[in-house]
Amino acid sequence: MAEKKEKKDYSLWEVVKVSETKNGQYRITLKKRIAKELGVNGGDYIVFLKNENGDMIVKKLELKDLKM
Image (cartoon, rainbow, N blue to C red):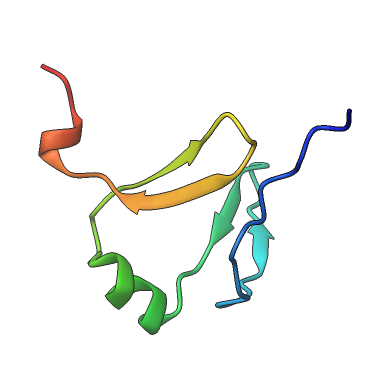
């Protein structure tokens, strides 16, 4: 019997462009509404997480997220 796929309830929220720097690194620029939604300001860190289904999750890195 075929395995039933879980329906994901996502909608397109924003599209951002990835730029390449002269030294071969990549950079994204967050639009104000995304930064506001994530609660980030200049100097903050964001983290990209990947779950077992391969979905990427972006969130602000908080001190409580760091294990000391």
